[in-house]
Length: 314
Length: 253
Image (cartoon, rainbow over all chains, first blue to last red; front, side):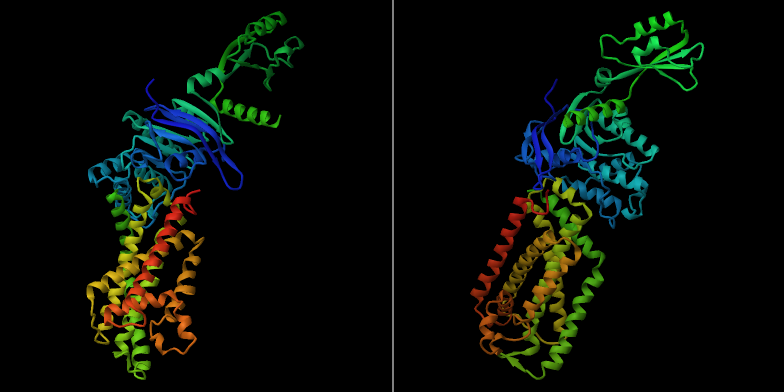
């Protein structure tokens, strides 16, 4: 594997009030990947991004952008980073085109109307280029924020909650945009608390809670490793209740008595399925169909956060 | 140096001024006219000359300074306070700009506008009284120095202020009274003791008199003392800004 494009070591942020927003966080982001940082509100996602981008000061730790220290080489490193913050903050009296050009020039690049046109067209904003920002809808403003972040052609893009409060269609557009950016070689780091988003887009997922990275894993590996599976059995004859002989497996019976569900740990050596099926045969319960379903990232996430809390409480 | 970045901020700020160009210029013209009508015609007729200078001409440097102070502080403080208020400051902070470059963009633009207003006042004054400037080059340099100092001061105010009303507090409650009491419209030699000596502790006295010296070659304090006081003020503001960026005071969490 090549050197990481972004390398975070021991990043800590403590506020004067004593709150520790980040606790010695380590993270490597690979070139060209889409990395999703998942976590509940206040977990430290935005703090981490803000420190990398130079908006918040770190209490401790270092960040290397392609091997370059982010404070000592801030001119070089910042030029490579684009940031789309969570809030729709913009100069509402400015026309769209000039606000995007402003962002480009702020990063020291010479004006390039053709390039800006391309960005605006990609984001379906070209028709609105002369509009004053306050006249735009929320969804368009969100895209303006992205256009501003892309104006200086960064190769690392931070999207902080890109689809918070965004309708389904725009969310799909956003996902397509992120995929296109990846095809162009841009590394994308996005934060979200929509699991669906990470599941849909990310190559790797990091879960952050209370300033700590609980886990970083390839999305597929994560789902396999931690995934719980559910076995559904469509019974030939509905049951009144779960027979005592099956009680060891704690299966659930649907209200109509026609479906028996059994949850099992897919990563365990013994899933308990063969023995359950054998016990059913012995009890004379027949089934006409069965399927197993992988649990979603959301289930995994909720599990992790809850276990984290339990451990903290113990 | 990220010259393009500085230029982007500078252009952005001037563009903001251009949106309010007419009110921005009408206000100093009308105010100056009012001062001349009140001070020049009504009071000036009672006090013909100060140190051999006709009263109408005597108050021109003071009028220019008064507007320069308030314009500088207001423009510079608003310029940096607005992005802090709306949150657009994120872009400035995440751009490859040094603190010096950021300040240069904001302070440079605010100083440009403040100097323009001062020169408009100078032009308006000509409609009422003949004014001659003994050292025009020095006058412009001094104007620029004071504008830059007060814009740096305004930048600090814009960072310090927690809301828009606080932006008004410093110019209205401190700078304007100090200017009125600092000999903008009279010579401090006209004051009885101990008031004259007390007035010498007002830093604005030196700024106004230094500027007046470039017009008439004569003032209540020596030009050297005035220049020293102005440079000292500029130095204090520079140190303040340096401290803000070093500590991140109200700029970076």
